[in-house]
Length: 255
Ligand code: ADP
Ligand code: MG
Image: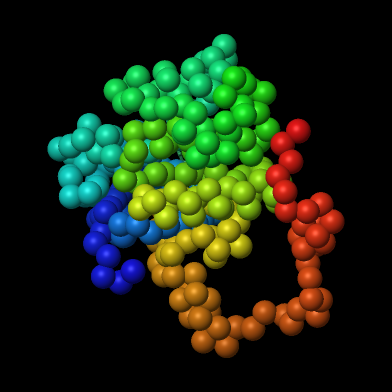
């Protein structure tokens, strides 16, 4: 990963909402082909940062390059190569999943086979279902499918697993790995540290609008351990999540 070229460069990004500085001059790069995590407490500035890169929000200061294009000069070209989760309010309630994909493909001016796309997120049997009829995990998978319609180089996932049951969460991890294996760069936010440790090549930790750490998950753990930190010894060989998965199995429920 060290030699990979940056597909996103953020330099001294500042975002002020009135007098309040939500993002305080952050800089980072995302490498092509990596899964990059933005971690941080609620209100840290993760969504603001993502939405600015996605061209959905105005920045106050700073410079952003996406795939070699300056966001100030090429917002429309950048939109064509990124995949963004659309607001669910855009999911017209009367349309089924196939019809929604056709609609979004039309907006992107792309020809997409809805069946193939639904297959890629394991939803082909829901082709005729309405969005509101889907389980939480299915909704998230559909939302991720909509980010793939324009065959983007980069997709942005803002808390895609929040509120999902353990099986659906793991199923989504597989989907994210699958998308990355096809060469797509993934930027993801999550509050689940096990998820970030499992999925992300590198993570930035943001707190109150500042990046306070940026490294591989292992690098960050090694840094902490090198300070003498030791977790209280785990006396049990399993945890409650192990019990849950052991008892309910790994297969996905979507009743
Ligand atoms: P995160 O995604 O890390 O939880 P956000 O980027 O959503 O954080 O928000 C960062 C900070 O900016 C928060 O304090 C939030 O209240 C504030 N904020 C976000 N959007 C707006 C807005 N449109 N107007 C004013 N303040 C906002
Ligand atoms: Mg957020």
